Image (tube, rainbow, N blue to C red; front, top):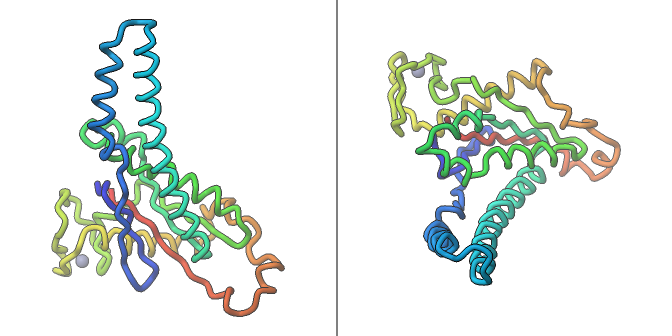
Length: 219
Ligand SMILES: [Zn+2]
C-alpha cells in the first residue's frame, strides 16, 4: 500500500501528489509532551498545562491534514466534472498495525468524504470504484490478473510482458473501471446531483469541456 502519495490520471497523463504526513512530522514532539503529561501529578497545575500542550499538538496535526485535503479536493472539483476514486477499505487496512499510522496520517477516508460532499455541486459526478476491484493486480494492457503480485514497485506482466510501474498501472485500471461504471450508469452516487444545470451552460463554451480525473490510492 502506498501511503506517501495520491496518484492521479486524467486520461492522458499520470501524476502524483506527495502527502504532507503531519503526524509523522510532529511525532517526536508529541511523544515528549505525552511523556511529560504522564509524569505530572494528578490534579496539578502542571498536569493541566501538559495536557493542553498535547491537545495543541494533536489539533495542529489535524488542522494541517484537513487544510491540505480540502485544498486538494476543491482544486479537483473545480477542474473536473467527473471524478473517479478508489475506495480502499480503510477500516480493514487500519487493522494492520504497521501501516495504521501512515494510513490514518494520509487521511484518505476523509479525502473521499470531502469529495463526496463537494460533488453535491451542480454538474459534478463522483464515481466510486469498489474496494474489491484488483486495481494493482490487473495488467492495464491485456487485463491479465497477476494474483501473485507482491508489494514491489515494478513488475512485468506474465502474459504480455509489459513492464509496469505499480501506481501508474493501478490508476489506469481505476480510470477504465470508472468509465465502465459510468457507462453502465450504476453506482454513480447521488453526489452527481443535477447534471447540466442551466447556470452551468450560460457560462459559454470554455467551461463545458468535459474532463475527468481519477484518484487512486494503490492498495
Ligand atoms: Zn499484460
